Image (tube, rainbow, N blue to C red):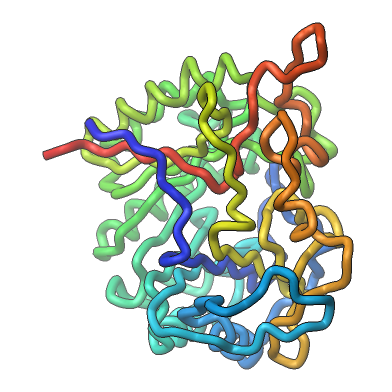
Length: 353
């Protein structure tokens, strides 16, 4: 078994592209905030323009000290960017298939569709396994009772049906399981379930108290002890079946240095209202450091998220301390018992053959 921390890399940039915020579900931990992210659905012409803006983007030569209003320009190099199509529920967009084909034409390094499993507009018949690298399904319980309490009645069976259909049609598939106190107890039941599905990857996410989950947030965050007792062991058990498992580091070990992805990686979280964030923890606030204006990527005025990336605090992640400090604990002298890693820092576990 091989377990490693996946280091941030400028050689692998990521575009998390929310092409709409509409969804057919109302999950209790949904991170969409329509007041901040907009309620519009991007038309296919805009989607194509924005894909072209980010395609293969490398920000060589861009200075982090540029002032508000400075234009990032294009500065594109081929094949450096991965794209994940998100919503809301992206398969609700009638032109998702066209967006996928355009992303492939533009030479994105990889293309993923994140879905709740309902697979609207016959998306599996309108794209091919050669055009999509992964279709990623969200399931948040090993049983119907737990999953559907979080995601809505009927979601459990619909998601599993969608996975089986995608696998049967030759698509590479993955699963996302967002851990909270509401479903942590069933994570240990997932190895048996996923080993039978034919998926290639399994992602364990930690709940972020943002978006719709803010109202439901009390008591949902997982303690450090529970996370470390359960998540790494489950990851190894699932990986033993040949599935690659990825989960956030969350808690830094000992003197392990803190790094912020906002300073050492290129990740862009794009919303239909043209806001572009570099840190997903900030998405509930008008702290976006970039926005799209006339199909150009432009820096916003201060203060924004980028002004916070280089701040150093004993707790590790500044954004976590500001936005969701419920996973922090302190000694009697007010020094932190542990430090929180950047939410983009991942652990990967895979079987060595």
